[in-house]
Image 1 (cartoon, helix red, strand yellow):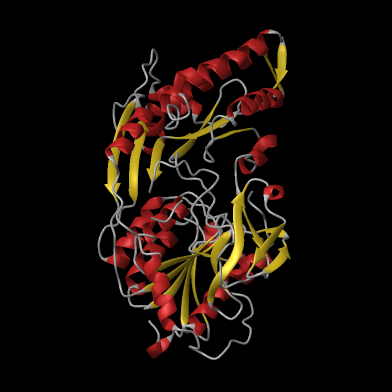
Image 2 (image 1 turned 135 degrees about the vertical axis):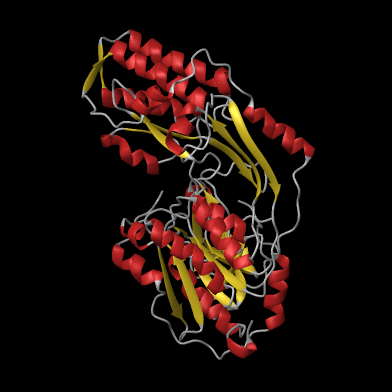
Length: 472
């Protein structure tokens, strides 16, 4: 199975890359060996890999119900759902009340509470914060936020998890554990023999041929090698950060676009977000039927921050003519917090889990689909990627995704005295394996700088003769 920060580019660059940059002259059509490409497709085919009993037992340990002395009423939760004015300073007693409440809410409604250690881990953190507050008469709200964030963010490795005030909102993008993709630019080679395999990645060369490059997903590029001998030549290596496509507010209104490149031979369906206009999202989901008739196309998920998975499932059903489920162990911690926000369950209490399991729905069509991903492909964008990888002729192109998927269905609650926003998800979900992928994401099949990935697909299709009557 294929396995599973945010750099901002200008609006102009986003629009430019969304439609493909200016196309350069291409080599003669179909000069590559088509059998090489067919062999590559065979190599990346998804393989059945059911969950083992050991994995199931391990996963169940993350879902142990918590005993609660106090079950929050819907009225209490509705009050916590209201955004509040944030005072500059509160008393230490008010701060302690909010801290105590925050930890109660995490235990009561957070899907990752047990995964990250449960009471054994969280109670000592709470007590350290409360002890520090005992020595104070008053505390600035920003200082309390910082105290809570610095205590919890190293423990809760979850990109859906936030503690924020208006002044601290940038922290939702700053996660010390978040890894990024780095490339050695303009270095391609055909023989990976004797090259350190952890850095060797399949890519698309300047002429469109399948070849190799050097790429790595890591926290610190200073740890990467500075020299490497490849095909008998020693190279000095300069690692460059891959630049993802930007999230932008306009995408929520636009939702998706349909264009073509390569003189109209290659359709491009770009999904900017799974959030925004319901009408537009339904229109996107309906396009799955029409793309069934397109033998070759690009599905562009670069910069997609996520939203509602339901539209991805509907698109897949329209495209494949059957329901598609990911390989997943999925559980939702149903509490009054969740039901007050999302509804659907009545008389729910914290510690009650709704669970499901799937070994994945594999699908096969005659279509060849290139899926563009990058470090800003997040949450539902990653869930969509997951479903697509269960197809036999699907090729992921770009860089690792964001890694924001294990603890979804998030909602915001506002602490009553300070107005600090506490955000966490009800879900505890694992896909493909029990590997914790937050901050890492899913890897592509072909590693390409995101700004070049669409043009690279055009080059590849031309090189192997994938268009028209001689193509797919």
